[in-house]
Amino acid sequence: VQLQASGGGLVQAGRSLRLSCAAPRAIFSVFRDYDMGWYRQPPGAQRELVAAISSGRSTNYGDSVKGRFTISRDNSKKRVYLEMNSLKPEDTGIYYCNAKDPRGYESWGQGTQVTVSS
Image 1 (cartoon, one colour):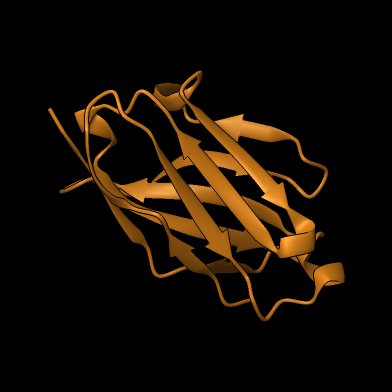
Image 2 (image 1 turned 45 degrees about the vertical axis):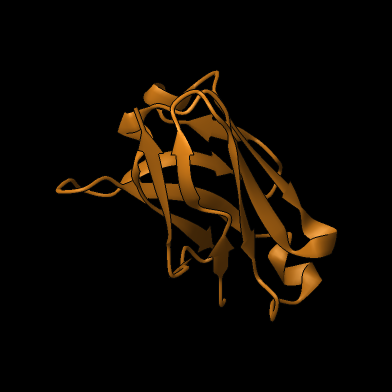
């Protein structure tokens, strides 16, 4: 499935951003069965899980973002969102949207840059 991430930008520490991931070409009845996630890759580091939401809307968060970030999905719009509050400089990185279908096949979006200044 093709994924389009958007919403990144440059913000000051303590501010908020909302990322959006769209799957415009996905069929609704197929999208709702995907497990979706947001990953990030900080400069010079490996890609890491930020947040995930299953087809059944169970959520999972990386330890560093618990209590600050919220993942949600709108299946009717074929979108997944990541609400990021109280941003910190260490949240800086490229944020990628991920989709996993019931067979386990994964798709990745192109990434959106988030930069948090101190």
